[in-house]
Amino acid sequence: MQTTICAPVTGEGKCAVSVIRLSGPQALEFTRRIAAPGMLFTPRKQVFCALMDGENVLDKALVTYFKAPNSFTGEDVVEFSVHGSPYIRGRLLEILCRLGAVPARRGEFSYRAFLNGKMDLVEAQGLCDLISAGNKEAHTIAMSSLDGRLSARLEGVKKTLTDLLAQIEVRLDDVDEEMTPLTDEQISAPLNQAILTLSKLADTFSVGKFIKEGLKVAIVGAPNAGKSSLLNALVGFDRAIVSAASGTTRDTIEEALDVNGRKIILTDTAGIRDHALDPAEQEGMKRSIKALKAADAVIMVMDASREPTPQERSLWQDVLAEKKRTLLALNKQDACRQNFTWNPGEGNYSVVRLSCKTGEGVDELKKALTQDLTAAAAEDGVMLSNLRQYEAVLRAQTELEMVSRRLTHGAGGEIYAEHIRAALLSLKDLIGEVTPDDVLDVIFSSFCMGK
Image 1: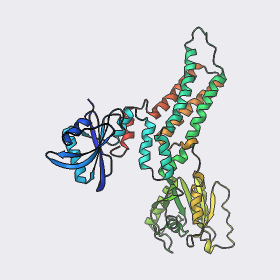
Image 2: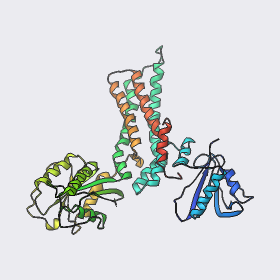
Image 3: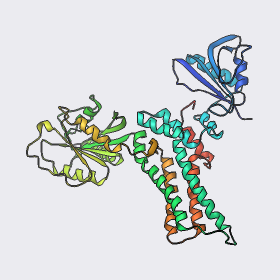
């Protein structure tokens, strides 16, 4: 018989109310054994009753019973809404465990919901993302997974491919050749439809990832260009030390902020120049280069009150060579020279003129940071923000593109069927139909306790 598990589903510490969840075949039995005598528990009806600790009342709580399969996990579930005392919460869990319940592992309630068909793997990961959503758009992406819109899109592709595979395989088994062979158009039409849907989904990952995890932006430049001043101006307080002396910043400084509903993770770096004054500055410059390479986007800060040095020009070329989203921030516009003649050259970048001292251009820079991350979602707001999902979609898309290429050479039904099966396997793994147990364990272990 499967074990009955228990865990708090609300946070730790003192609070007004804590919720303890009990799930499994003995959930109702254990509840009756700790409730005041004579209490009746009707499915989906909240009951106010005393919870007993031996002869003493532990707490007076609201108790809700959910009868299988109509519960979150698909099992019998009881939820105790008790007062938020750490003692009450801990003691109730102790009593339940003495009766035979087992402390739930991280994500075990959701794992059981998945095993019992209450949600697929995409929806389960949407639930995990929903809990950690830190802004409106991350919440929207998570909800598109949790409410089944992403799964429905994938199921539509699965059905298209399954129907096509059936048409191919039935003709492979037709040894007497009684069926009319499929034309190239009959194969390519559903095939291209599936490829287009998967391609659109894959294209949303670059934006979905940034919305979920945040856009990592490195602020680089020469000493005294105003990098730390820019960090302070963007976050709205003095996060980094600013000094007229060059080389003040010796290490990377990281700070997150919300820009138009987007999470931006800024990294202020040590100034980069030809010769370091000491080993500490030399190490700081190494970390600056490392931050530049690890970033999703780069802000190169230049002092517009003077012409750039040869080292700055070289650094600018290095930044462009990274082929990342790049902003050139021409700082110190309040003291800008009228004869500033440097031409940054051609490349895929934006230029913002600003003054960290007066605040001029700072809002424009914030808008420029996020302007390319808007409206890249597929229809209905469905986006991929999970690397595992993205890789599975790419694998399926690659297999189908192989069919498309082989179709032009008349490779034959056996070859087409092999690639379509591989694409279907990737989609089934994504949804959780064929995912190995060890992979599932890793996925659900990332959930918070009580989910």
